[in-house]
Length: 145
Image 1: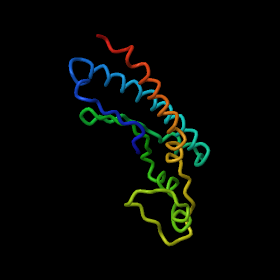
Image 2: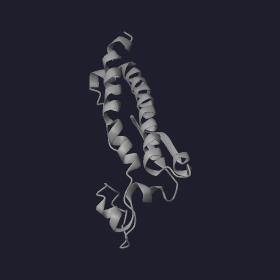
Image 3: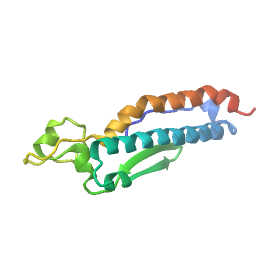
Image 4: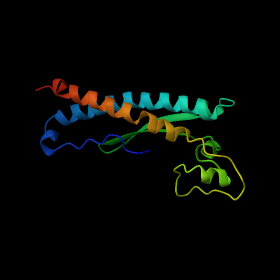
């Protein structure tokens, strides 16, 4: 997933418990933003790929923490989900949808890409940025002296 919001704390904010309060705020904002992306992902799968409900039911999300960095991910482990996302064969390649470097298109006609989760990311980008902006505006009042 692409980075929507990146927060770099200057050294003077890392002193005392200010950093822990800011990281707590970040976790709240990430959870709220995850709800936005989850909603958009479900709507996108319903609109572009909904047949039996298996694709929709396969949607999963997780928050991953690496040191002081955290990210939210939406994904599906359904084996054919990526075929719908990126397409297959010549039609998939002609769709022009960004795909992982390891993804290969065959020479058959195949099917066009439906770009479900990618579409949800693009559609929710401004809402997520707005969510973090609103949290940032409230941050000074939340820091306890």
